[in-house]
Amino acid sequence: MQLFFLISLALLPGLLIAVYLYLHDKHEPEPIGLVIISFFLGAVSFFLNLLIAWPVDKLIPVDDHDLTAQAIHAFAVVAFIEELSKFLFLRFFIYPNKNFNEPLDGIIYAVMIGMGFATAENVLYVWEGGFDTAIIRMFSAIPAHAMFSVMMGYWMGRAKFIHHFETRYALLGLLSAVLLHGLYDYFLFISFLPGIWIWSFVTLAIGIYLGRKAIQIHIHSSPFIEMKKASQD
Image (cartoon, rainbow, N blue to C red; front, side, top):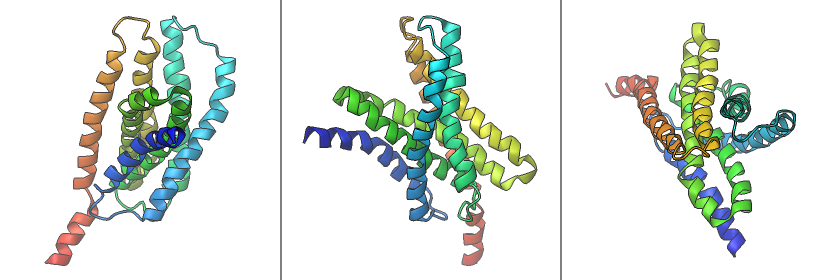
């Protein structure tokens, strides 16, 4: 019973965020089947990340109290590999799909992949750390992954529909997610400095603010708004 409770607690936050965002896609909701596939692709991306990160971690040892080494580890190793793993599935499996047909879809599918990744990761962490870890990550790591994914998806949504900047915007999607992820992790990695960890949550708060703005921008730029208005005239 305790194991079932812990696994449920590990699965819950990612699923709730995914459902919450899906319900905001009101102009032209995505096919539920593709949404579910995206979530599971995110879980697969987590295991791809492990395959890449494990040998990299072995090759690049980190001095726990070296600020520069921790910065390299946070940005170039952890954040880059994790966000690249999500990005690859978004760009090459979901992006070409005909159902990706408005800018908001970039955010929807990026977050589904991000929550699949975060949920798979969370199960492992909660399995090892128990109830306290589940509660802490529910209000930190899981919403942080959602935030990273929103920023990636915002630029991927623009890339899909502004073709002369497609590659540039796609790369901005990856880099914006890496930047926020790296900042968030870096302040946690150097938590040996008293009070510095609070900046991780400042980063999270800023990211949530930017993410909400990004969602609203794409909601209001949906081509289906004008199509609905035209059909009602």
